[in-house]
Image 1 (tube, helix red, strand yellow):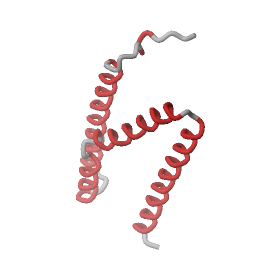
Image 2 (cartoon, rainbow, N blue to C red):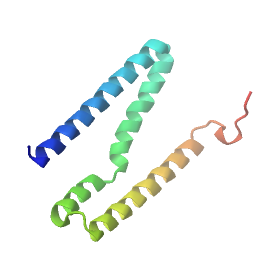
Image 3 (cartoon, one colour):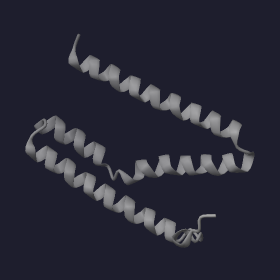
Image 4 (tube, one colour):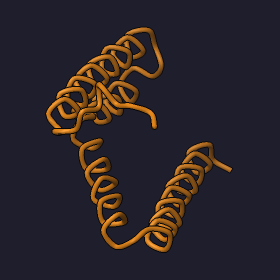
Length: 112
């Protein structure tokens, strides 16, 4: 069997598992929580999914081109590391700004 076919099948199985897990999570949340809390959770889950696509900054396309052109050489690994650092830095920055502007006093939370 072709290595490309095997890798394609593995990718398909991983994607199917992700869809199944998301479905089970949605079903569990909607059955276990009230309508308002489930709505908040699903809104947050949807925002997280959409923003994760946005904050990848197109790095997946760059990596496909780099791997296709050069294979897994040192330059490609350097490009991957650089891209991951940028994505992490921007995502953390936006997350901290979002947490600070949320209106909740998360920095002085008290344990009851």
